[in-house]
Length: 253
Image 1 (cartoon, rainbow, N blue to C red):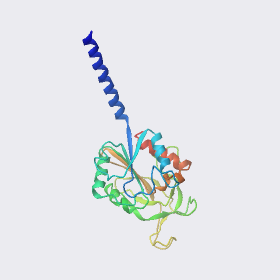
Image 2 (image 1 turned 180 degrees about the vertical axis):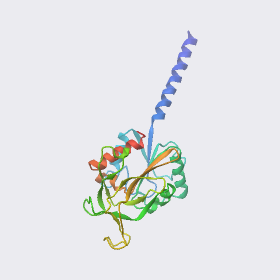
Image 3 (image 1 turned 90 degrees about the horizontal axis):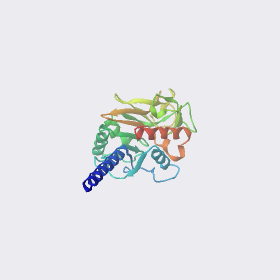
């Protein structure tokens, strides 16, 4: 009888371990990079901060944490998704490679630009590039011509239920050979190449890409040319829906 009870206890422990392992495998961990002089943070509730989008990511099943550490293989070891939003300080070359390895292993990466130069190295590693100045629009303008609605959306889970979203100081993106443009300006948008804030001879006019998706190894990435679209102030109905869709994508849903 004692032997039988012992066997039952062993079986119960094994089942408990199996159940725990299964639960651990389902945990989605999203890490928010805040180690590159980011000014807009998930812990802060002010108008320009990111507490709202962090809550949305949690609502789609992710555990959310931020880090001020350098991005290394060790930091990214148990992470499912990484968000790099609005850095003012460039990622070091070794961080770029660690992020690339993270994606190659199957990780999901979301990147949002506030200024382009701190992300040049990472975008180059993904075979992408950014413009040297922000975009201006002549259609779908909100209050001034570098705040505008984006209505040219490609079929993507990110845009389920959406016909538009808004950006507030957006950089153009070059998808390179491997990226896929998923959102673009109107054909009347322009880049202020001479810096005079007026459309003039020599400025570039056309439909520019503002969001790019792609894959690297077993993983995937999405890059937005703007970070303000997910700030608390700008989470209107459409941008909030975009954030919900992004949160689902980060969670692998």
